[in-house]
Image 1: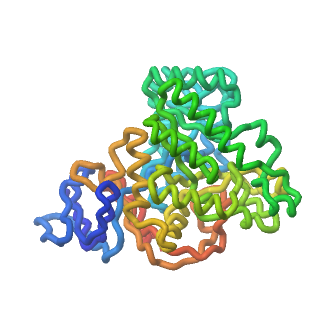
Image 2 (image 1 turned 120 degrees about the vertical axis):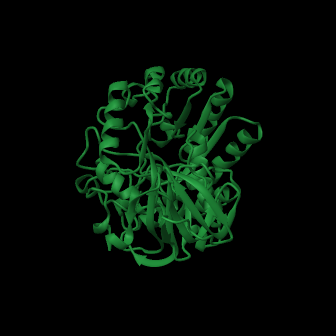
Length: 430
């Protein structure tokens, strides 16, 4: 059956196109694209009128934490998949920070099967970089790669021991594998829960100096240069770290970087009166850091925008700020929060979807992220100008720890397709 998505505003991140047109889908893939025109539909085709709204490649979200196995009460593949579909995320790349961690092929196989059974979106899994995510001994990366791991990471736990990390990078380079790491100098960051500044001092919160990120990144980049590994820094959030990243890219190293949408749209002042839903890892930064990182995304120095989806239950968040768990959910809020950057004039839609879809797909060797003939028909239709107020009680995630509760948002997902199959329709959901 042929499906025609007509009367759409096509957003193509690879070419930078933003133009009216239509997309034809057959067999789960894009069969044809009409740029700047609305061709007649062939006989027997199903036609969906997009109403002039934006149609873009589905979001590829790197680094999603899901609670299976071990913490299903926080998030299951079923609830995470529903949240992803409602947020325009068509591919989730899940972290290995489960209980037990994904440091064994049997656990990776469990994750794969559970995802296939429960989630309507595509799911790929990272394998652990070190056993039990403890940073002491390299995980069985070869076996995990054979079992389907798309990258290796210890999630938000930096590998502090440089010798262990070097061995991991060297082995990953031999496998041709991607390493995703959280750059942070743990000896400087230990015990901190907010960015070190005058503001955190007034709140009486132990501070993490921004320099901890730069020192951590400098070490990682030096070892990446030594080993030749493909390295991705999952969270570059400070202005001081950007110079190191720029120099590494100019030197031709196989390095890339990402940032969560929370660090692009929020700053340290949002912590306010000790609001624990704003407690993240790394902590929210100063406004000048946030602005510098937004600019880095705009110029392509930072490659990927991710949700930083890390669900936590009410009990772990309803604690004093220092004792509360870190993290926020973000699958449903990723696109509307990122559209704040578009409405502020910092990015245009093709540039935004380059960071949300194209670059993460390329980084992981996935075929999606493009509006192109032959590409998977993983698509999101959204109204970038629709105003609404977010109520965390309506989120599909089991955990409701969003920093955007009761925030005014502009931009909303209308439809989501994976392989040409509709997995979310806001008209049916209303």
